[in-house]
Length: 152
Image 1: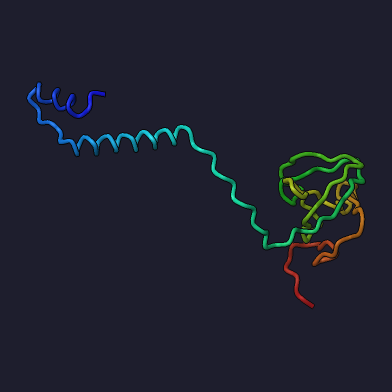
Image 2: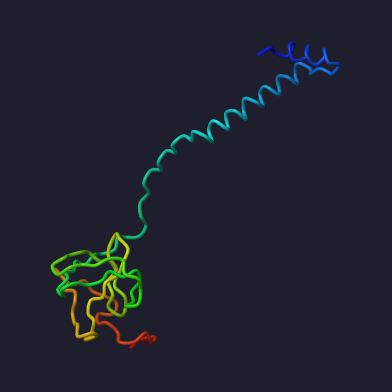
């Protein structure tokens, strides 16, 4: 680096105006800031992990299930027309933390739903069996239609 004297000397030699020392200092400071920002953009520092906060909601209870049919499809949504994500075989077990009003269970900690009972569709009945103590549900029995239910 030639410093402000060298830069100013070059400007004067070609008939240009020169910078004041304060202008040169300001330009150097600006160049340092731009270089630091660019270096940070190209090599970001890992952000410190935030301290875990207490979850205001209690964890959902989980129910364990076992596949009792030859196989059952794991669906993206709780519908027989939803895309298939995978397949579970007879004897496979898994945990579910949610159940829909019409008998689908959502796998805990992974995507997908499995129907508990096909209700005779395609000659298939029950495909899942609960293991352990059955957890209470808001609606203990699957409902036959998607119509709104009234309180009794």
